[in-house]
Image 1 (cartoon, rainbow, N blue to C red):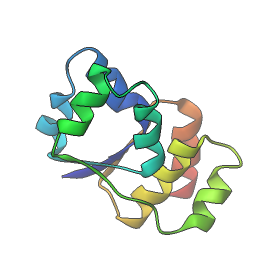
Image 2 (image 1 turned 180 degrees about the vertical axis):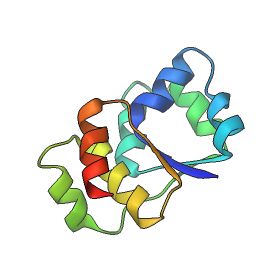
Image 3 (image 1 turned 30 degrees about the vertical axis):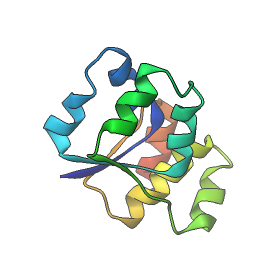
Length: 110
């Protein structure tokens, strides 16, 4: 199963040493470049960044529909907007979002 994820689910699981739960549940997690950039801002030497960079089952892929991303950016941060657009394009079987507002907007776009 392939899922698309925003920053919060990945970062939070990595912080508590449970990032592998995503691999066990979904096999493949795709993140957009904005999510990867948000994670990298933590710091290159941070364990969360190292864990994500070494997880071969987490891949980065940009959303093609930049019009959708721009529209979603009117209400959401860049990572959430790209994640929603990417999930609609792939189509992913699941979209992991940490914030309620993002989940509500994603449901409206589905």
